[in-house]
Every structure is written in C-alpha cells, then in structure tokens.
Length: 239
Image 1 (cartoon, helix red, strand yellow):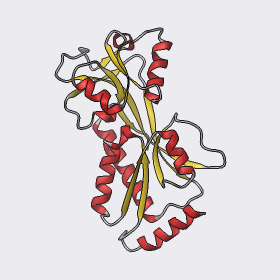
Image 2: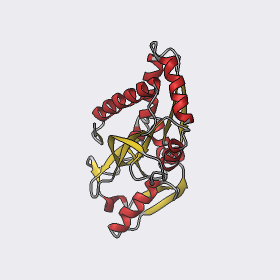
Image 3: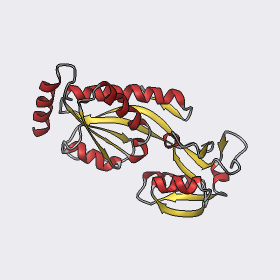
C-alpha cells in the first residue's frame, strides 16, 4: 500500500513532461558498468530533474527489495532464487548473455580462434570468483559435468579484482560478456563446448502500477538493451 501511494504521488508530479519524479533501480554489479550505465546516462539526459537511486546487489537480494517496495524495478538474472511468498513479479526477458573467457590483451592469445573449449580452459591458470557468486557455481558445475579439474591460479576475488588480475596477466577468468565494455586491456574468447549463458530480465511487482518516471526508465532500459545486443555477437536480444 505504501509503495502504491508513493507511485501515485510521483505520477501526479510527473504528468507535465517528467519535470519531477523518482526512479529506484536495482541491478547486479556486473551490469552497472555496462547496460545500466548507458541506460542511466540516456535517461538523465532526457529527464535531468528526475531523482535516480541505484541499488547494486545480487539478483536474490534485489528480488527481496522488489518484494518490500525498496526498489521500483530491477534487472535480475534468471537463475537467482525464488520469488518471496505472497509477492507476484512480472519479468520481461531482455538479453541472453554468454559467459566468455577473458585474458590479458598484453599477453599472447589463449586460443588461435574466436572460441575456446572447456577442456582447453582447464589447462590455463584460472582466476575463480568467491563461492557466493552464481558465476562460480555455474563454472564449477560445467567442469564437474565434463569430468575436468580446473587449474586455479587464484580464487575468492570479487569482480573488479578478478578483472584487474586478468589485465595483469595473473590468469584468465570466465565472466559475462558485458563486463568487457570499456576494458581495452582485456581480450575475450567465446566458450565453444559447452557454451554457458545467463538470461537478463527486467522485473517489477505485478500489483504496483509503475509511476510515469519508472515507466520511462523501463522504456530506456529496453531500448538500451536492444542497442547492446547489436554491438556484441555474444549477447542476444530476447525482445
């Protein structure tokens, strides 16, 4: 009820060209330097007087934030946990994003082609995320399924640290394709066998009518996602 009341108050102030309003957006850290950064930049240019608040967290936590009305909309990955009991969420699938192998652009390429097999990856020094990462669970499961044991150079790091270690040639890592945006010190190769991917969806509560500003932000995110998919063959639009 409080979330609905806030939405109504915001909408009353937004009807004249989005001169005011508020958008509370949630997103995982892996999307905040790419898709979210581009969407917020475009939205702010068009509607500079709308207040923006960004919550960076994992998808499981963001679903909980949606449930209690702490965020209006959130970008979430498909496999990250159940919806809390009593809450109905609407999910709009936006993108299917491949997990790719990244290595230092200053070092020799880890493969001679555009892709690399899981068997070849297992022979390379691998920088692995902390076990709390969904990416780590996905990678570990893939190696187990193929009866392979990865050669770990380092484990337990967070995303930014992982990318910096890779840039410095400590090892390679498996990351979502979008984290490569604006990272000229990294090169990437697509995984050939098996390919791994994740689905990115835009979620909001089904029982709360989005305010005008929130609906406008949703449109900008959808448009930005389509643009991102056109620029990278490892990212596919689901719209």
